[in-house]
Length: 473
View 1 (cartoon, rainbow, N blue to C red):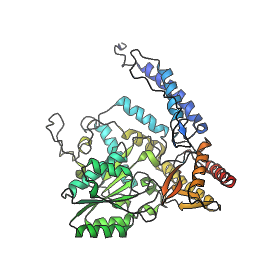
View 2 (cartoon, rainbow, N blue to C red):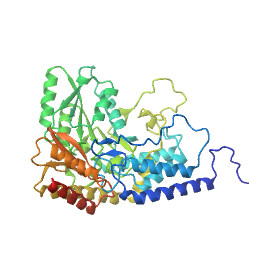
View 3 (cartoon, rainbow, N blue to C red):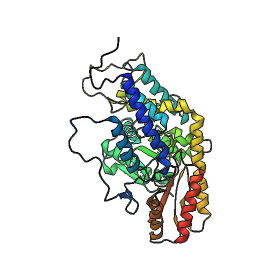
View 4 (cartoon, one colour):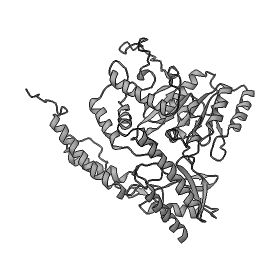
């Protein structure tokens, strides 16, 4: 006997199959055309590095529609407006930001997670789904060379992961407000400042240490800690970065870990960009990453996942336990037999999406050898391009790649005007997209090689293009 579908939300199997087939057909056509798009997006103004003034706003209606519209037409419009106006992350010549590209298996995993829709905040509501996320976390622990007792949770990104790490440090290393000190590089990601603010730290409790050639110098940290202790202040946390945003630098993680061990500080490693390069034998620069008390990772950067896929690893999961605060008898109690903390108890989230499936499925389908090969190619491509620029008399390398990001500019450009002009010419081409940062009062062009579509031929084309522009002046 066939089921009666009385709700407009309760589609038949045939409706679901038809809708997904139509979306796949339209998305597939966009996917194939992606290399021909402008990597900066059609809304980007290369001269101002912002949205064009004459950009037409496609979503300007102020009231929701009373009647529905055909799904096919809406999907077609969304692909047109979102797939072209937006920066095309994953374009083969998108070299602008530390952003990877979501692989198609992850999209299938996400769609599956949304349709199955298990609640993963507690083990008893979806034990298989929670165990799948637990397994994914154990895989991350193994990849990072952490001890097997390490654990953690998947988050929306490193911003929330770092927030949890800051809270853990605050609770595990208690000190009076105003007396606490947290040590960060002036190259640390700005989300760390946001996390400290959200966790109730005062501005003066953050000790910002001037970098040494882009990296956090261990001696400067030691000197500042000694000075602060003499003043009666209490050091509680040190943050090291495995891949800074400006120049891709990796802090001396082993040296920083030694300081934390000697001074009893919580050591957090921000591995949002660079952490996954730890899977490469040649990436010895990341030694010490495994010594952190906590580690933030962004699979949506170097590990080919869509945005909203982050992770926090911790050595002691109890350090990130959140008190329920108010009576919550409707929640299952802690089960000592299971010896586990619920995800809803180690995160500010109660409702959370089943975000582990996209990552788990991708690892299962592709295997680690594919991911390592991808990262190794980015590692090698960055060094090839840097060497090509270094061989040309017009260019100055500001920072060679520690990982897959580096900075360069034009020589003999004291007022930055020539480098700025070159930057605008590159992005005006509609073929390449890079970004800049300011470094020691110099304008620096950042080139980040991370997308899985970028191959050697694209970098050869890019090098030829910028050499031609530099020679024309």
